[in-house]
Length: 211
Length: 211
DNA sequence: TGGTGTGAACAACTTCACAGCG
DNA sequence: CGCTGTGAAGTTGTTCACACCA
Figure: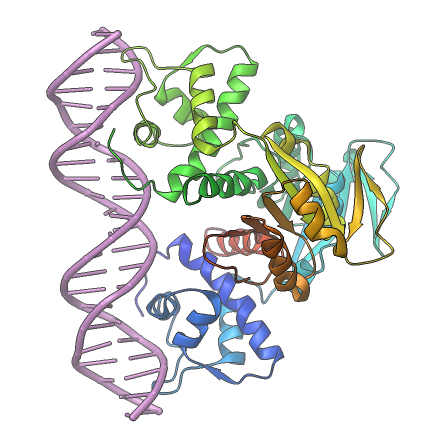
């Protein structure tokens, strides 16, 4: 394989392959062909092979891919072979839902702190070992607990300020659930998650492709 | 404008434009140019003009777009000028978070029923006017309340069965938050929302573009 | 033999550049 | 004059088709 820029779409798909491989592994499946994996996750076999080829040669000609090995390799590519330390800001319902979503931990994302600006929420405990902390503690805690990723589930008007505080405290990646674009300095990565966009998409398809 | 297939990416962006226009409208902004809107939502001006051109001529040459009118037109294109009737299945934390997320209602998505298989949850009330109903009531309620969209926030192993029941009951669109691919008959639209995918993407970018 | 890895063809989407109009 | 609408150019991503190898 050569050293190429990887399409973002490829990365998204690797994430999908990883989930299906993980299911297959749980069912003790040893080997799978690109055709079968494609079937499984509703994609094109050539696409899977090409996606993987960006990173190396993982398959065996005439055989397919060893499930365990491929899963390991993909997880390594995606950076899931390490544990990521995450803080969440804004313990509303969405915040709580994310904090207690088991799949994140399985993938190596560990929530090690939760903050809220509302004094009424501060001190509440979440799950086994999290307690809602005041915003004032954010800089110290982010440093102490070596937090790398910040999740913003605060209300939209507060999102930019929260982002600023997270970045100042040393966070290098931000996942923003608030419905506003936030600006961050060079070198920090922001991803925007927009739940209403998914609805809008569905509604549009239902309007047009139907009835 | 001609009658062309609309790129899915265009639809996603319209959704974004709608949000920013709505903010601009709230600030009493009357007119905006494609260049300025592009700046606002971090996109290319030509892209915005082209996206809009798929559906008609909404701008005024030498002037720009009237915010209110454009917002109205985009909402109409996306099917947001009607009210969508939605049922949610699986009242876990994520389910509750979605049920109480105010932005959905603003966009015209109305949760008119919530179901759960767990008898302990049945009967609990959610917000002002929702009560968790047993799965057995699903067919009747979906019909009675003319529900068009189903949200699946049930655990992964139950997702396919929930989808089947929703579709049988008459739902034409499904938004699936469970981390499994679900199959539905021709004519029903499914969208898959995958939260760990967003994390994986962020992690990958942090791994590669940094440090 | 059967399934990978990959160049080459194709398709989709984005950006440019500018004519045309208010 | 300024900004839209849009063909044409450019870029990116997907699929095909087959050489090649376990």
